[in-house]
Amino acid sequence: MKKILVTGGCGYIGSHTIVDLIQHGFEVISADDNSRSKPNILDGVEKITGVKVKNYTVDLCIFDDTHAIFVENPDIDGIIHFAAYKSVGESVEKPLMYFENNMNSLINILRCAAEFKTAHFVFSSSCTVYGNPSESPVTENTPIQQAESPYGYTKQMGEQIVQQTVNSNGIQSILLRYFNPVGAHPSIQIGEIPLGRPANLVPAITQTAIGKLPQMNVYGNDYPTKDGSCVRDYIHVSDIAHAHTLALNYLIAGKNTGNCEIFNLGTGKGYTVLEVIRTFEKISSHPLNYTISARRPGDITAIFANNEKAKSLLGWQPKYNIEDMMQTAWNWERKLQSEEIIFKTQDPSLN
Ligand code: WQD
Image (cartoon, rainbow, N blue to C red; front, side):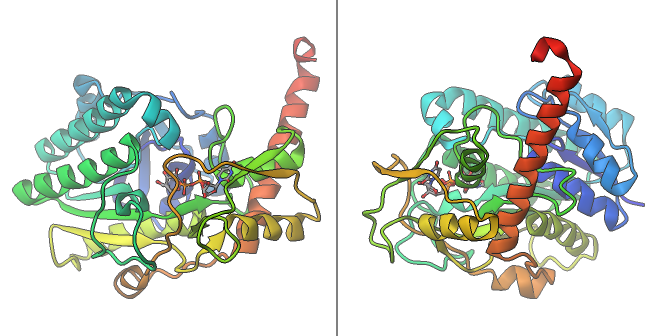
């Protein structure tokens, strides 16, 4: 059984990927300092898979602590590197925090991968690297544009660091460019746990619908799109997760043609913000309280993926449609609320 190190394994995409890896025969360990995640998300992974995954609560910016994981696990056959800060807005306010965290953790992981001759490396990248493309769908050859935020720069620089490093030490690697990951595992044992007020669209929708937020904003309806709101390629997090398993199998089978291949992970279909809201209202029978507000700085008009390369080379086929994405996100939000209610009733001090 091949052992895979998943950094950021307690995070949203990381935890869903661990489930998929286990279900496809991999042994998995996690490294996550839980600064932006909750360790009990791995309890949900255990409920789904029956496997208790060990998490190393390590700040990957500390080389010695990162190195110690590899000393204890010299048989790590592959690494999937998710661990990074990912809020576009926060990165604009605190650029140095983003550069320091996202780059130092990546460099330490790659140093260890080189020293321990880890064979396979998958890097969590983002459609953010395309900036504001002049047209969609975008392919993996669409020119990289000026990043719209320090977060976007960390993904662009991260890709370059991986590409340059693996060319020098022969690690076989893949860059996966996610479009907009949304939804929750169908079992609703795991899902997205935004910290504070959600920046992303779908948790903002579900938190407004359940009453955590009084109202949500639609950031602009004056874009040159069918209804004036921005277009994105929303992709279910479980489809994203399975692509990582397929990417590892592709590398293990030696099918990659270069040291570092790139794949877009999107459905290939774009939806406007208002279409997503309509879809949510339809599946939940819940009219949403939103208001049209000013555009959000840094937002691009439209982007969606050409995903033919991942489909043909990885054998990847997204399973979930936009209704499934909204339904699982809504089911998860209601689960979170019920659990919070249970915690409150169990702990009188919280009442
Ligand atoms: C989507 C649309 C907003 C919130 C994200 C991640 C980025 C990358 C791509 C993986 C935009 C609008 C949002 C709200 C709104 N993913 N919106 N009201 O900006 O496309 O980028 O996915 O790496 O890391 O940040 O996603 O969900 O923030 O916004 O109208 O309350 O929804 O204006 O048009 P974005 P998002």
